[in-house]
Amino acid sequence: MIVYSLSGPSGTGKSTSALQFAHEHHIEAIIDDGLLIVNGQKKAGTSAKFEKNTITAVRRAIFQDEQHRNDVIEAIEKSGIESLLIIGTSDKMTKTIANRLQLAPIDHFHYIEEIRSSKEIQMAQFVRLTQGKHVMPIPYKQVEQNFFKRFIQRGFEIFSKNRVKLGETTIVQPDFHQQVITISKNVYTQLLQYILKQTEFIAKVDSVHFALKQMNTVVELTIFIKGPVHYDVIEKMRGLQAEISTQFLQHFEFEPATINISIKGVH
Image (cartoon, rainbow, N blue to C red; front, side, top):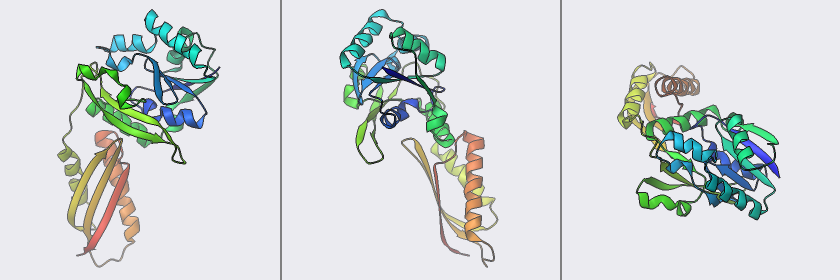
């Protein structure tokens, strides 16, 4: 069996990227937070995301429980898979998991920075910090813990580049993730309004919108610019986009994925 490792700090989007990464590398199975996932479907294991605290979650993720470990080992043997991806926070963690599941030494080591942009990582960490949301790379219907009435919602479908469905994700809020920072949506729009007010070529602001959609943020601005126009408008708009990105990074530690600026007229 060929064994792969994908590691990176908590909250950087490893689980979100797992199905796409496995497809691109022709990997049949994934070990993620205590689960064995084969071709996008849960086959065995219990998710660490439903443990009561961080300590028990880590123990679950690295298969310290003998019955849990044996169940997953048996499922791997029965599945007949020839390639498997182990997800963890470090090489040490993925090596520990490989050893406990009696897998061959890891053949290939990969890191989240190789497959996600800095903006995507920043956004994933921001969502984890402000909403406490974790992603499981299995369908909603396979999350059996609904009767605990924890926060669980459908995530999004994962497709390959040629639009073949690879699987689905489910979004959960674990019990052990209790430290969440709440930021009102007004805070983002107020920062945008302040930036626009300080921008000398803007005559009037018609509308300001900020939206957080799944794992992306979208800024929509409609403005009037000052006349007469003796300057490069496109260059000015690019400069404004750069300033918004810089300010968001400074205040919230992420950059908006999309900044759309519409010019309504000249004043």
